[in-house]
Image (cartoon, chains in turn orange, cyan):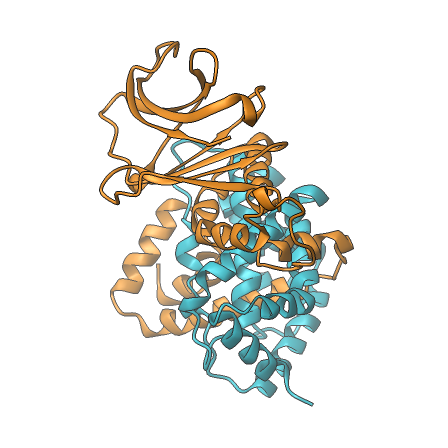
Amino acid sequence: MNTDQYTDLCELYALGALDAAERVEFEQHLAGGCRECRAGLEQAFELNEMILSATPITQPRPQLRSRVLAGFGRPVQERPRVAAWGWGLAAAAVLLLAFGAWFTEHSWRVANSDELARLREIQQILQAPSTKEVTFGPQPAEPHGSIFVNPKLGMILIASGMPEPPAGWTYESWVVPKDGAPIPIEAFRAPNGRGVSLVRSSLAASDLKAVAVSLEPLGTPVVKPTKLVFAAGIGS
Amino acid sequence: MKSVAIDDQEIAKRLKQKDPDAMAELYDRYGGLLYSVILRSVGNQATAEDLVQETFLRIWNRIHTFDVERGRLEGWIVTVARNRAIDYLRSLRSQPGEAATPLEDLEHSGLFVTRETEADRLTRRKTVGAALERLNDAQREVLELTHFQGLTQTEIAERTHKPLGTVKSLVRSALKVLRGSEVGAEGSR
């Protein structure tokens, strides 16, 4: 390829729309220090923006505004009604932002609408004024974090300081009823020691005494916790 | 009256200070555009709304990397929105073994800085808008598929049942028109 042919690829490169072989070739060419292509690339980003920005405007539903902004601490118009559940929207919003990167990193990989719905469910629980936070494991070197309990919507377990599971093992979340054996909820990963599990249970939060996490071998039925990592009381 | 660029600069400054009201202003200014770009890509209202939400979250989380003095806020956020939509479409297409370019690498806010004056940019924008009107149907189709569907030229050839060489010619001619290096649109080959 000559320089003209390379500069023709700038817009597609900036869009991430080059075939793999072309992309590698273009990047090698850029790495060689071609000034024309570097300048072309700057202009390409700008041209692409202008093409995108020329899109005719379709106004979204008015509800989208409040939905989007609710994640950033607004509108905060009413206090939780029950003092015992008064952890509050503001703190939930802070947490939501703190884990924004997690959502972002995971949500772009979603393979289907079920996963998007799951992310939405997590977000709803974190944002709900009636959600209560229970912390566990105050030692930073050990698994620690929070369980967000909403009496109607469910629970979210957010844990940090989780050790890397051995090869062929995965984390499993559990609920521990006040009266009965632990019930497995879902397998989840904890990249960089941080894991999030959506704890859906048919039992009311008031009937549970703890949320637990175990290590389970992949590909085998989960019946009871194989290696308990921690159990955190939910105090209800 | 303040210019768009100065208003954007102020919003960006306040976003960096994590001011939620700045997010509301950003939404009021660009929410319709971001939604429209995403909807154009995914074609579904509910999905578009989810992706708009993800887009604003990403902007909030990444605003610390934005250069307030030289950055083009609109350019950056519209690209972030487009890329969320393309990531979504790619996840649906799911092509194992095909190493798609990670779009995250192409939306670093440092890539969206300007050396032009606002007046120059407005002029260019008008030129691009007029050039879009001059594209013929075939050129418009490939542009839609690259910019709003995230397809490579090979994928476009497969989808449109056109030879790869024809697709490349169409893309090249469409972009030349838009770069302003040609007066009129070329015909498809």
